[in-house]
Image (cartoon, rainbow, N blue to C red):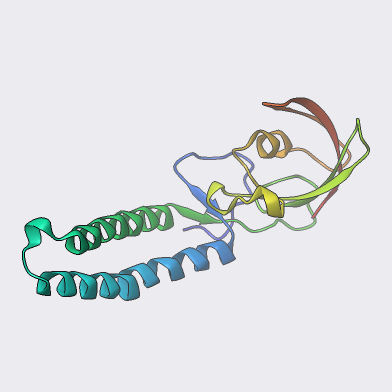
Length: 165
């Protein structure tokens, strides 16, 4: 894990995330390893007490949950091991992962606010745009005042970067 990700270049083996996103993922991992494993173990014990395991739907469901939980644990551990926490550079007008930007669509003059984040933190409904998305890729490395053409499945839109914070 690296505390400074002010590089514009993006490495696909790295999971870029905020400090908050990293902590949230660590908490989720801890929850799965402790409380969820215990809950599943209790379900398995209960299912075993019901008798014949060959036709025991409760046992099968608990085993399935156990498998899915362990897969999620491995996935989170992998992502956390490749995590690079992004921090905003000092008074820099260049769009990077972690930047908060205000853009204006030239055609409609509508402004939008976005935060460029790693793919695991992306939530477009909340303005959290992945650096891997067409929108995020188009803004990376650009500066305040620049015009940017963004090609999406819906077509091409031109934006002007109003502010970078």
